Image (cartoon, rainbow, N blue to C red; front, side, top):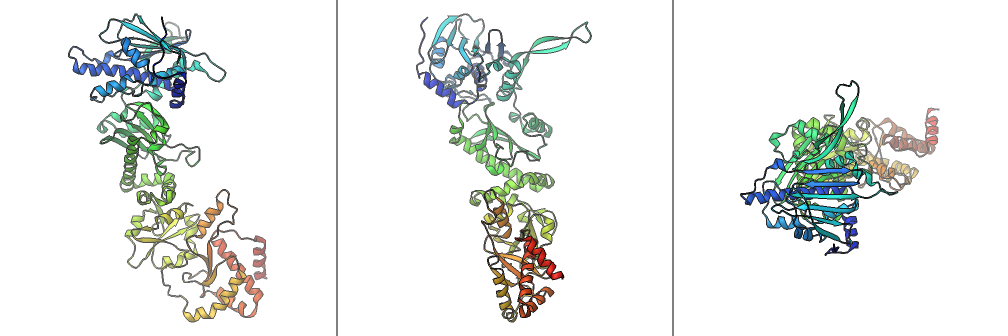
Length: 626
């Protein structure tokens, strides 16, 4: 029997195709099962137009059988089969797809779709097999044919015997090597796990002979092994069911079955899109943060299915980074089964799905914020930082999407509030949205800089995440109201006890002398318009605040001195300490230097900044006590 050559390409093309499209060998079983499913679907569509052909779904199945002794793995189907010509055309030409041609020639409906399109999936079998044999008998034919190949060198086709319509694909599994263990593809548990992973939702039963153990009759305490045929796939995917058929428990069980997390999701989204792009999706918003979420090892993405067949375990392109916490899956018949990550990045259907998913997630979070505040706050405790990073990232490009999802602790209620809630209760004379940034709410409540703002009856938002101020700088304004730090040089509030011009002139020389003593440490020393009970504080000029300075200098690679805010030392001219300063300036310049350094270091400690020379600081305190 003469060997025929592949019509399309050489051995190099075959090897390139396998290695470039498929990165995991186990994918071969997914491809062969998908082909088998297509073959049964073709009978279904033939029955729609042929009155003599009755499609009884119970008669159709896919069977997987492993034989360790002969090292063969057989995938059989009761589908439409192939004639000799179809074998030549579909198996003899690399990348020529019979399913694609059938799909173009027939109008597909009733939820059925032909999965394979490019005709390359079948050849993935050569990743695990030395010899691939296909025995097939076509519907309506009395003859069967055997196609056999050892790879890109060519193939043979000959007449053979086969009692039933359908196709058997027999793989002669490769021998183990030092680097590769091919025996796993003959193991029952491994084959079952691959089916569950990739083909669990194929609409026809995938059967296997499964071994088990049971008590032996008439013999107490003894067990015997047995083998029985089982269906190893679930067949009906939850996402194709009507929402009315499903309960919250069904969705939670699916979450657990897919191992999306070990927590209980706070919310789920079930999407059935029938517009320009047809797809189904089930998305979950988790309650708790995965242990590796804020590490480089964390990999975002949704499971991506093509007509019920898993084509990608983590499709990152479906989620923006700021929604990377979302878990779930997407199934679309508009996506090709045989598609690489590189091809997906340029797929218009995928981009349309991703845009729609982003909108659905935002809408669900807004609904949760409005109608399930407790649940939202639990979610926000885990992932609020990611939302704020999304505001800051890409130069604030996504701030409009995310700003209404942010929460901050309020000075009024001591609980989390939205920006909308803050602005809605601002008094008419309030110009700014005031905030204080620091390590904790408890510490921020004691800041001297908050006195004047709170005395005016204005609400302050407490920023305790290191990303908070950076995110707010990107938002800049919310409903035409600018954000203002309580440590800002100008609060936009006129204090009743503000220094008049005479006081300013009187203390001008004192402030200049203190500034000279603090050369390189502060930009200015001045009378404070914000302090009432405290003697001193630091404020800043410009966009860089003290908290931002701390965050930037704490980053990897920073030397601790690379970034400095323009600090201003503010003094309360109505405090007793200021009178001591004036006396020292008039009569004891050494004491003035002592007091100036003490007040400056005191202001640093209030801000949570390190004192440059702790020993000198403690000695200065001792000098005052003596």
